[in-house]
Image (cartoon, rainbow, N blue to C red; front, side, top):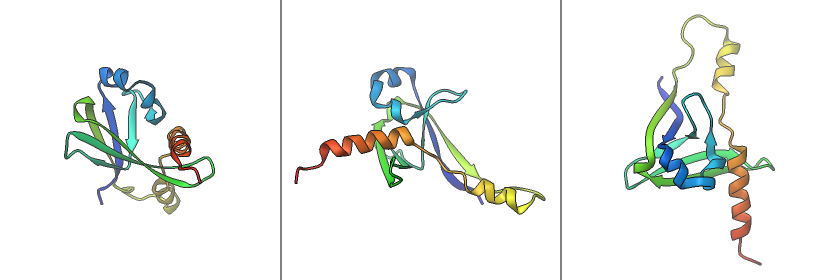
Length: 121
């Protein structure tokens, strides 16, 4: 019933400044401030590991892993889908279950960097 849909990772302002342009393709804005939306998170070490799922411009699925020092993270918010409660039409329930996170800028950045690192051959 309380399945985790993902996490919003908020950073200290100094961390965003230190990470600079490298973090910008992964950031999303909100009234609470810029953050990274990720599907999985591992906080068990010196680095916080964030896994993002997205699609390339060609529609291929991508899994990205971002790792930053844990001291840069101000707050992690878990997003949950408790399903719809009460008496609602089934169409609303289906619409709520199909929400996905899109990371087009991030997917393009990773795709561009993977093209640069491919061995010649």
